[in-house]
Length: 82
Image 1 (tube, rainbow, N blue to C red):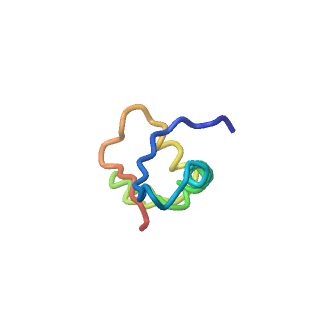
Image 2 (cartoon, rainbow, N blue to C red):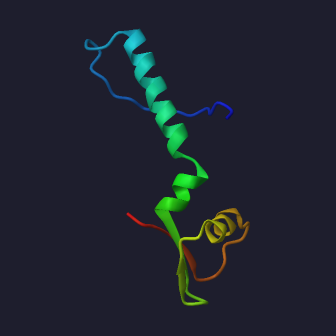
């Protein structure tokens, strides 16, 4: 997996942490986000509601097609299960 460049905004009390502790925490947060931001986790947490076919699907193939479609399909919604 290639490294991801991202901007993180972390608010800390300036007296509580030294630079090494901050770098360690930022690395842990980045590692955690990298493991969660995969298609596997995304397909577990979402479903597609297709109002044209009157169906709700959690199948990975249906979700991937909906995510990668260049033009959104009319009355097809990607819903987070939470």
